[in-house]
Image 1 (cartoon, rainbow, N blue to C red):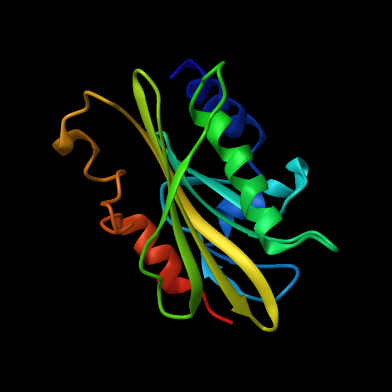
Image 2 (image 1 turned 135 degrees about the horizontal axis):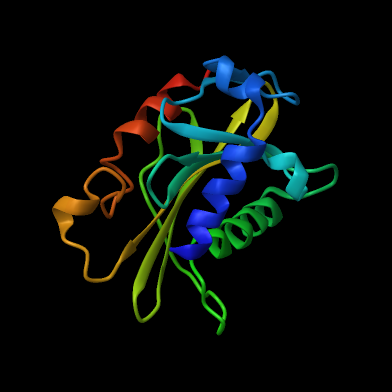
Length: 180
């Protein structure tokens, strides 16, 4: 939780005003347009070597992301890099984070969807990762969240997706806003 609070403070201080002022964003590579959801802190993921955007939900250990492969990068490598980048932002595990994966239903327009899950002695982490081709370019987008193992279902209903990757209203609004 301490790591998450530090990250939120960092985002509050360094968030780009241009992202907050505009409710729509456009990818620099493919021209895909999407609506930036309310109650997120959009950050430029490019600073971490990604072409895309990471959006952290206010007051919760969850967020949304969208990204494109770097030049010569395979989509599978981008997926692995995204998961390895997101996980340590919200889960602290000195032993290393190893995910279980399974396929989940895709959204209209997607070519693949994967549910990544991780558990340690006190936390659970989920990352929903979708693959799509837009304007001839492959991209990934998704959602991530952390909860405590002993969290009551009612306390995490707004942030925790079900086993099929569904049930998160803010993420549903985001992926439905994706336009080529």
